[in-house]
Image (cartoon, rainbow, N blue to C red; front, side, top):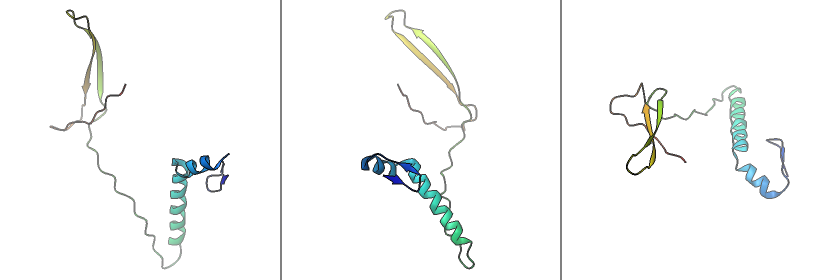
Length: 102
């Protein structure tokens, strides 16, 4: 199976179908649509109708600084990590989003 848009060859139908749902193929479809719209806009009397989607404006927090300290409880002998994170440009009362990953 061959995708003529992306110029890729796939060994089976499942792989080809997975490719058509993938990021590379979708970006190539978007690129082709933008090119077609631009070409249509080049004709006299036809205005392009593609608008850029508005991205939500994220609050600025600056480049975060951090310090990691290893600790040990003398009574229970448990080890722990203390993360101190500094956001230099964060606005008053703004809570930054965070996620802990293993």
